[in-house]
Amino acid sequence: MDMGPGGPMMGIPGDWWRNSQIAQELNLSDQQKQQLSQIFSSHRSNLMALRGNVESEQGKLRDLLDQDQPQQDQVLAEVAQLQAARNALEKEFTVMSLGFRGVLTPAQWKTLRDSAKEHMHFGRHPGGPGGEPAPPSPQ
Image 1 (tube, rainbow, N blue to C red):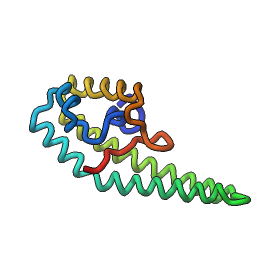
Image 2: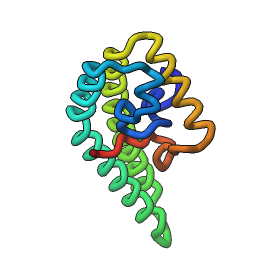
Image 3: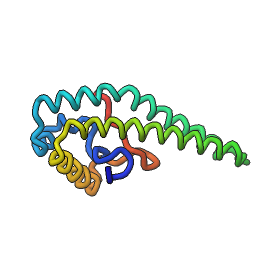
């Protein structure tokens, strides 16, 4: 995956296989759509929990930095916690992306990757704060 964290889907809305334009571009079969939905469903709750953990750690870091005299050791420890939370989110998103990739043909994967680059170029769907991928929105 060469498009940064989360792979090529990060520029496309979470349920891209249901988007008629993208599904049509990829010429997805009904079976592929069903498999992609199942993969997404199996990761959705974990992605949401991990995203919540990232947001919580971001809040803790902000609180520490907003103190009159932030303690360096506390700030650095919280930065490590935030990094760990982001890494866990990125890993889960990557595992899901690999599952998606296993359903698609190499040609479909290339088309999806190209479509994501186009969406990102035109700013249609930005990534999450801090540059991590925006997990697919729950349906």
